[in-house]
Length: 264
Image (cartoon, rainbow, N blue to C red; front, top):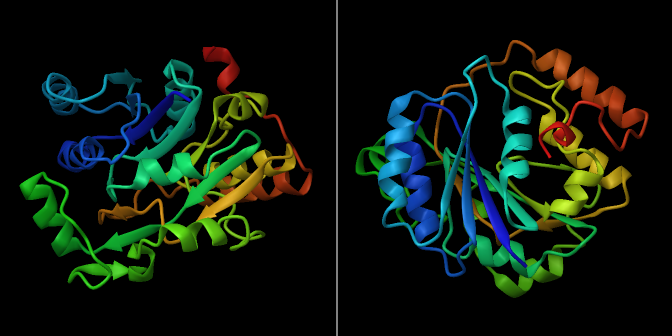
């Protein structure tokens, strides 16, 4: 297995540096990091170039023009550029528990996708972390957790027991914490680029994986990410996106028409 860790980012170099610092300290490193950049300014490019030199694995920077929130398109381009046959995807405004990559690999399999959760940090703790630009160790009792502190407990054996059983028919996908084989991604044509602006693209993607015959494994008490606080933005298409997602789900659509194939 060759693992490509895809990190989606947009104009948040301080958070991206924290994220990359957490990747550097994984118990199991990915084979490469692909940074999917939805049109960030030069500061992000400069950070990536600076980090490349001493980073333990290759970093690939995939950039597209800033023309609105086009995360689905950026993820497709990133997967197309990835050399690995197994994809782990996160966002650039999270940082990782040291066993994050190890946990995803442990529960991986062809015809399986792995979905994790997150611990949400508040504005004050986020500001402190981004100022220091280093990933700290977070515990469920750390001051500054805004919500879901229970997701910060790490229990390897319990997570393995719960993975095929927990929330089998709920929360199909979370784009900032998922993994899958690239061949399963390509079979459903990846993300549907209908989605622009926040909302729905990860649910639609996971629904189509399920419709294609893939099985979800839910990472509870493992595969932990810590989500840095940010304002809610790019919400103008949310209603349209979720209405479209629900329609696609009700018709059991498997392969989208506007997807990754154009980049392969």
